[in-house]
Image 1: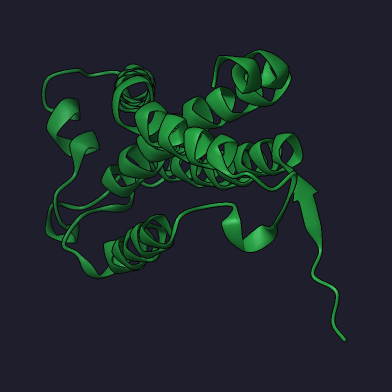
Image 2: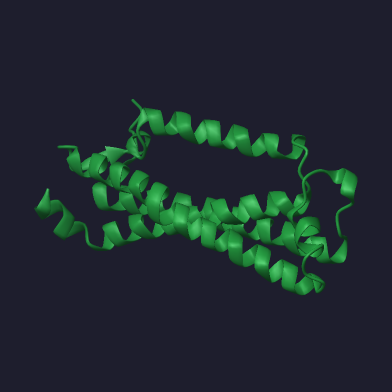
Length: 170
C-alpha cells in the first residue's frame, strides 16, 4: 500500500509561496540577463521588436536605457503582482483553508483549473523565443512576470505566518 505524503495547511500554503518565489526568481534572473545583454550586444533592427532600440533612439546612454527598462519592468511586475497575482494567491489560500482535513496531499496545492492555467502560462513562455521579439524585449517580459510572481509569493508567505489568524477568521 502506497502512503501519500500529506502536509498541514500552513505548510501547503508556504510551499505554494516557495514554488511561486523560485519560479519568479528564475524568471527575474533570466530577464535581467536578457536586458543587460543588450548593452554588450545591441540588437539589430531585423531581430524583431526591440524596446532597447526604440529607447536608444530617444536616450543616448545605453546604461540609462537599461535602467529605464529594468525600472519599467519591475514597476509593471509590481502592479501586476499587487492586482492580478495576489488575487489569485488569495483564492488559492482561501481554498486551502476551506478544506476540512487537517493534512492535505500535495495535489491540493493548487486547484485543477489553476494547474491548467500554469500549463498555459508555461506554453506561452515557451513560445516567446518563436515570436518576432528581441532578447531585450523578452527580458522585460520575463522580469515583469518574475517580479509579479515574487509579489504573489509574499502573500503566500504572509498567509503562512498569519495562519492562526486566518484560520480563526474563516
